[in-house]
Image 1 (spheres, helix red, strand yellow):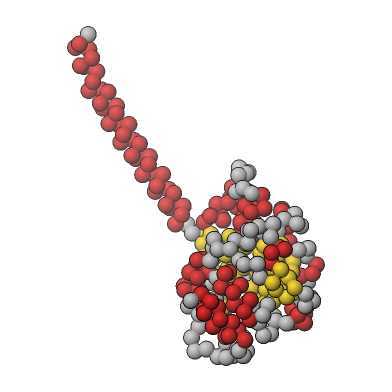
Image 2 (image 1 turned 90 degrees about the vertical axis):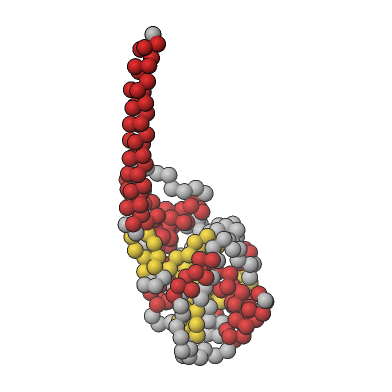
Length: 271
């Protein structure tokens, strides 16, 4: 069944883009994307902007940030790439130039040829950043790769309706985190990379680091609005949870003190 699904998806990729009457279901696409977390990406062989083979197996050993675009896009994909470029440069200041790699993958199997990839890379100055590669693949490989990444899209008339998704793979090629939107809170990208590159979660107690950690934990993505938001409900949950524990402790303490008080006369009468 899995091979049949990939074959159908590959066939659709090989066909010219045609208009669809329905848009992507945001909730379903989000669920598919999240379900991919924990799955390992196969050792696909892609084709880079120079027409050379790019074996994903050779990119193992360090985290890989995978940005999914199509080069003929004139709106979301360029904005996403420019924003990601800035965030990658910021992350490199903390994690070093060789801490992680980046791959921009053109998912339009028909249109994302080496020449188009080269032009896209030049426009966004991707070659200026160490460890940033750009590639595409044949329809079969593209179909398999996108399924493993949990990426959803639909061909429209001359373009694509797709999830704006950036995927973080760990050093073994396992999907570790999904990042959504053309612009996202910096900690959504940087915190997972810190965990992977440093091999541990952030433990600094400096006020700024603590606030960054709290911001990361309280930042949630809403697939229906396509935006991140700060979830104050987490603070309320912590507050009421702590209050409940405190009240329970007070009741237990009062019962214990009352029991001690009632036992004192008995002790005196025995003596």
